[in-house]
Image (cartoon, rainbow, N blue to C red):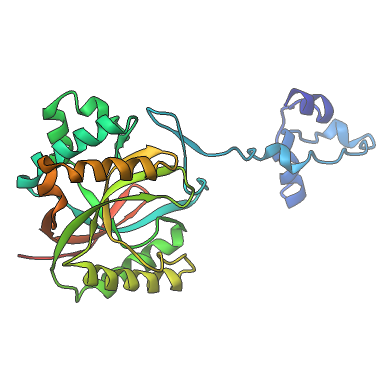
Length: 291
């Protein structure tokens, strides 16, 4: 900016008496005005305006740091855009929490560097305190995605939320069976997830709801969900493509008689209580199911 001041002149004081757009533009750039003394002499040839790219923020890759390293966002942050996510909230039933805590603790001992989903907290730290591990399973709400997490613009929010509420108003409560441990890798191959997949009850209903969301996404020019959706809740994640290591660990534990109760389905069953939509930091209730 010092170079610009030397080239285009320092700010001067005075009152702006020219209301034309051109005069306003010049005043906004360097604050200079023309007084009565200057009007008695020929005006010097004006210099060209500085290049516009000097006033633009350079494109910098958008990174989010974690306790384990650097995690790249699925899409860059753009001013005025909001991340949209449509999902089913899932609370793990009380009787199954202790079994899952044992399983997670054993997985963490076989696969180092895993983190808890959403909070990015190292599982190894949670496993040092059984109370913290149980609290992680007790207090956290997991989710089944009904659509991709995508960026939308502010003017699309009301339309999308209204359409979701209209499409889902006739939906009824159903049960979901989580039957299988599986590993998923994100599209960018930057993270691997240990998840519980819905294989029995609820799979048909969830698939229909994904198609409802696809219609709304399509009407708003947004990418639809995967062609062969596999509804699941993710519990743990690790950096990079580590599906082979995670699958081997799961298979080893499932062969153990100690964990046979977790390898014979369903691992647990729960009711769907609501469908929600998160836009940026705000959560919208799409529908709630009464008892």
